[in-house]
Structures are given as structure tokens and as C-alpha cells.
Amino acid sequence: MANDRPIRVAIIGLGFGAEFIPIYQNYPGAEMAAICRRDPKGLDECGDRYGIKGRYADYRELLKDPSIDAVHINSPIPDHAWMSIEALEAGKHVACTVPMGTSIDECRKIVEAQRASGKVYMMMETVVYSREYLFVKELHDKGELGRIQFLRGSHQQDMDGWPDYWPGLPPMWYATHCVSPCLALLGKHAESVVCHGSGRIREDLIARYGSPFAIETATFKIKGSDVVAEVTRSLFDTARQYRESFDATGSVKSFEWQQVEGEDPVIHTKSSTEHPLSEAEIPKRVKVPDYARLLPEGIRRFTQPAAIQDAEHLSFLQGGGHGGSHPHLVHAFLSAVRGDRPAMPDAETSANWTMVGLCAHESAMKGGERVEIPTF
Image 1 (cartoon, one colour):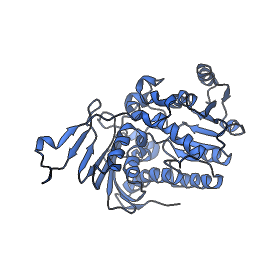
Image 2 (cartoon, helix red, strand yellow; image 1 turned 60 degrees about the vertical axis):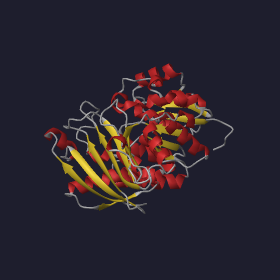
Image 3 (spheres, one colour; image 1 turned 60 degrees about the horizontal axis):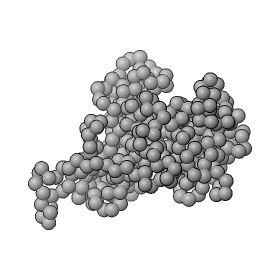
Image 4 (tube, helix red, strand yellow; image 1 turned 180 degrees about the horizontal axis):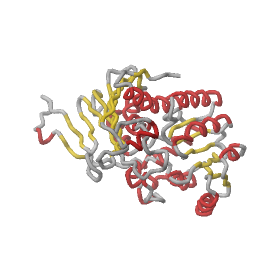
């Protein structure tokens, strides 16, 4: 990608996807070139609102536009894989919201398409660019946590009332938000998983995907590491405030996510002979800082909820604004397109993070058998 002209980006899907438009418009060296939505009325409303001339109701027509360098896909989950593959085959760089796909075969095909095209593929996983994750990563990189001993993630959400492909979705098919921080912190991939399903959802929900479980809990082994991670997912018929969290247990300090929205997380510090602590001193609540300083100045304000255009969108009401991750995602993707740094997560890593959940659900349906996670 030549550095002397802007990267021309098209956004596909304008519900949640519209949140990224002003970020691209304010990013140095990027141009918000086109938008795509099936509904012509909604397409024009969005285009008029943001002053975008390039408008497509047909995704495949957009892919024929030679001036588009990159697509950012925010379509419904069943469309992620085919849209990513066709964009890569059309010579476009691809950013795609999670998950990468809903089958091992889809993940494999995207990895193969990325390799064949030589273009960037990046799954836009919010959690590994959230301020909480960046805070824990900083502690880990400085050695303050000591040796990582265990990792845990949970993503519990009430999906009643969401679009029609959600009802009955196997919980682990959408597990990247809790899987990703565990693996990203160690910079390693998962190799195998054991998962158990618990409870039972309503019969009308089960009929859609054949998945009966209210909650799925998995433990997975990590390649080249003695650390095991555990993740818990629920979508329906489970009483729990939205929680998208991870804990990192270290030999010196541990980070523990808050129990309810509005609280601060806790750092536990191990008492030692050299630095003895009373029981009351071991846990301390901490304020997680913002990491806007890592971003180009023009997009720093977008880490804050005040800059969110559609604060009523369910993903924000329940997701707490995704931890200020959106501008970090845009910066990471466009930096990869420019060739300044590799995509994180790249295609292989995106596949691994997604397949942990897919293989976990397979394990749950087999009564907790261990399932090896494929490598491509």
C-alpha cells in the first residue's frame, strides 16, 4: 500500500458499523469512501448524515469498485465468512467483526483466501483493544504480575429481542470476547478444549440450532504453555447482568474483573516475607486508565462514550462502549494495511480464537470429550 494516497475504506452494515464512520473520517491517511446496506432508504440516510458519496445496496457491486482498498464488514454473523472470502478474492483488505465464521471449514477458507491474496485480514475483536485489556497487558509486560498461572474469561449476555439469527445460537459460537484476552496476553494459540453444557433453554430456542444448553463452560490448553484458561458463555434463560470479563492470575499480582457494572476491578497482591501484607491489604480496587495516548490525535476522543454516535445501540448499552476499543481497532487495521505492523489478530489467530468456541461447542455436544483445535 503506497503511503502517498489515503486508504479508501468501505463499511458494510450500518447498524453497529456506523459507529466506525467518524473514526475513519478523522483518521490521518484514510478516506471513508463508501458504505453498503441492503436497505436503500437506510443507506441514503446514513450517506447523507455523514456526507459519503459512495453508496451500494449490493455488496458484490461494491467489490467491483477498483478504488476501494479495504472493507470493514459489520454484517450479521451468517454473512461474515462469505463476505470476507469474496473481498479477499477481489483484492481487498478485510476487517470483519466477530466471529470469523460459524464452522471450521469457513475459518479454513478465510485463512486460505488471505494467504492467496496477500491482503490483510483482521478480525475486529474489541476486547483485546479495550482499556481493561491494555491495562493488564501493560502490567504483564512490565513483569508486575509475575508468572501467569491461570486465565479466565466470561461473556454473559441476555440476547432475547436480538435479530433473528441469534435465538438459540450455541453460546460458544460467539466466544471470542472471552477467549481472546486469555490467548492474546500470552501471545499463543489454543491447542485443545474440553467443554460442558449446563442447564436447558426453551424448546423453541433449541429447535433453531439444536443446542440445548443455557451455559457452556470450557477449559482449553495453550500451545507451548503450562497455563490453562477457562471461559463461560451464556445467551438465553440465564439471570445475569451483562458481563464481558477476564481475570489474570499471576504469581505476584492478579487482576480480577469487577462483579457488576460501575464498580472498579481488583488487583490482588501476594503477601511475601519481604513485603508482608495484611489480609485487608491484599485486594485493592484500581481505576483503569484510558489509552487514547496510543492513538493518532485525530481519533483519540473516540475512546470515550461521549463520542459514540448511537449510544442507544444495544451493543453499547450492554457492552459498556466496548472499553474504548473502536479507535484502537481502526488504528491497528490501517497500520497493518500500510505495512507498519502485522494485523493483530491476523487470519490464523482470528481462526484460532474463533475455533476455540466452535470446538468447545462440539465438545459440549459430545458430553465433554476433548477436541483438538485444527491448525491450517
